[in-house]
Length: 253
Length: 253
DNA sequence: CGAATGCAGAATGTATACAGCATCGTGTTC
DNA sequence: GAACACGATGCTGTATACATTCTGCATTCG
Image (cartoon, rainbow over all chains, first blue to last red; front, side, top):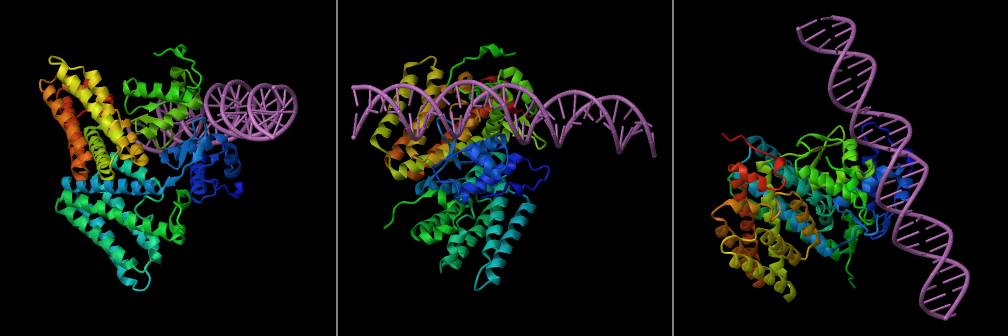
């Protein structure tokens, strides 16, 4: 239960945004049963805001892909099959590949190159200084940053928007499935492969090798495929996947 | 001015949908100045519905990409640079390429192949029977149908959703720029090239040649690039481009 | 003369009341 | 005992009233 008294009455944070964040949290934490109808009035009670902001939040979360419109009206919590998750990751890889190619073909500013390079140096540091256990939280943060920089290097508002939509699915974003590796003995190996791809794509962009940059980013996303497969096989690792409660598991004996 | 009395009071067609359609029309026809703020109350007056459905429509059109949220609140009509239009087309080509590759790799049912083939036959008919002047309206319709079939062959809900978003931009959809050719002497030539690509991609899918299918769809979308370039050069052809009023033209002496 | 401040108007964000419809349960009848 | 119909409940869709905030202009002070 969430207390309505928890309202941080910051001005400038509208009720709509508050409702949207809280609602997304409820969905991702699985407190709303997947497939179930999301009642507006219940949300009014739980979130402590009136129906109007709740409705706005519902509409936006539907556009985000976390909810589904019910033909007769209202919304329900969406469920995802394994296939859909795989496809979402593939789409992300494809779009990130396009971003890398555009960046390579058009050329990028020295500042951007510097930023990306610095980011990779920071990741190298994280991986080098921690021989026993890697600071995953920091890795995840830096990884997300590198991917953001890459997208910004493409300098395409339209592409950025599309990628924003894909990454809205919590299990499709670049860093979503990284923590799954944490229980794997191969973690360091996989991370170093991923980091090598980071370096390679940056080099390719610098050298204006569009096709190569694109191919690398596509393959890079497929590391997430492997991590997903691992999580699906070892059910206990599913806890580490954000929004995993939305994924319809196939029956495994 | 639009009369509010024009309300077709079909039940089952909600006010929200009505507002959304009407508002989109206003934007695309350029009756709302690009860049300008869209006042809710004015829309209430013009569309003949109350503020609530207008607000819903505004939010949905923002997600669609036709409006832009103003930081201080409200929405404004979005403007697009030539660069953005090009990029939107490139994104569509990339995603359609992914769809074609997935279809090829996974294989498609005989029924799908038949449907696609029938559609292409119909297009062939249109192009053959009209030696003097092609029935462009029918071509556009069949072309859109073929692209829809192609997407459905990928059998990916997530991918279909993403493509829906790209095609929501009126000038980015597969058939949007076809009419531009109508004033060109090369029209028949370009259309036959496009149709050949249609045939080739279907063959590639049938033969499970994923890489080829993908490459063809990418190049296929670039025909739209050429048409756009043409429309931008000959300003009089811009009338044939849907939503052209939203495109910020660069100055040409 | 320019800049800053205050006021007025309007626009959005929010809450709530009302109407129509879907859904579910119960009672009656065959 | 089962099936159909009717009613009640609760839901969403819509409209509107209220509050807050932003904006633009005018006035005043430096």
